[in-house]
Length: 510
Image (cartoon, rainbow, N blue to C red; front, side, top):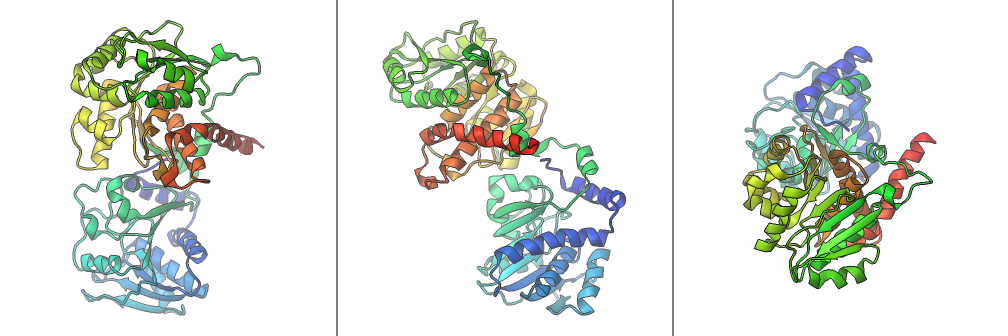
């Protein structure tokens, strides 16, 4: 699913109006109808609904929502804030409709400072400002927004919370934005929804299709996308009846140190549950028995080092290499990573302490083989490139880093961003807070190495692997609380995650 910029959405709307064709007021009604239907389904029927409309097209949407909810029997009060005495044509059209006979309480507000009473039991519909906003909120709307935010009411924002910019909010004040309980976005998510700093503003968001023209969407050029299961299902490689273990690649995972062999166990298990044909694990000598007993399906190479790895043995028959899980940042571990980078021409997945060592030795970046993946969480990425003031800024830096160094970046988070060497950015749609647990990143490394070994290119392997990792966590959450999910649960549910993806392909062709 594409994530267009705000100005591109406006162009898609215009194309739809011209080529469907459909009038602008009818497209507005179509969009507002989806919002009204959602509210009617989720709000208590006896809820008092207060609709706050602005003077632009977002306000027009809100006026239609107010009419439709009133027709459905809700008690609706609608406030049109028009201090400038200048409405958009479509907003003016629906204002006239309301004034000519809709059975709801309607008030046009032209004086600054008016603050309607809001009870905590109310449902508030926010249609004050839409994606066209390009400057921080000012009075009198700052006071109105604070009034809504402190009311305790359930707040539903139409398309985007008022005050929030669609993309970059570094110059914005989140306290001057509506803090939505729910945000109902038309046709696409907004890029701003995907960054942690905007979480309390956006609340729970959902995309509502409104029938924008498919040709306009297809022509829209944007580097940003939100991965869906249907898209990821198409990436899955089919398995031939006469395939054998050699068909599905040979992976090597190296790492571990005294007290952290569990990281390698988790990476190895998830790798084997992700379709790899053969797996070799290289660990310090003291960890060899742990791996042999815990993961009998994996072959092991005991390192010469007793408690840390000192060098990595990469054989020609191996197809992909993972390194970093639990390996520490000792001089011996650094030596092992440097030696591997100098000799390896296979795709690599570089995680955890291997990333921290790269941050200490940035000159090693040029040694990373083609088609490799780096999997930093925000703190690890900040060590690589410097601190960022926001998620948006960190994503921009990841974009620059990936294209400059020709590596695929998996920037982990609630909506993990996968950045390709060409600058494409795919945000992941699966996962839950239960994945924020020790060893979760190790399981992801194992999945990615398995996919790399099977011949997936880096960007596809990263997007598919991140999706499966999150999906396995979602499946685990169906039976246990987020608080109880462990990394082992993620690995154990990978088979179900693969099956769910395959079912999406089957359903599409049935």
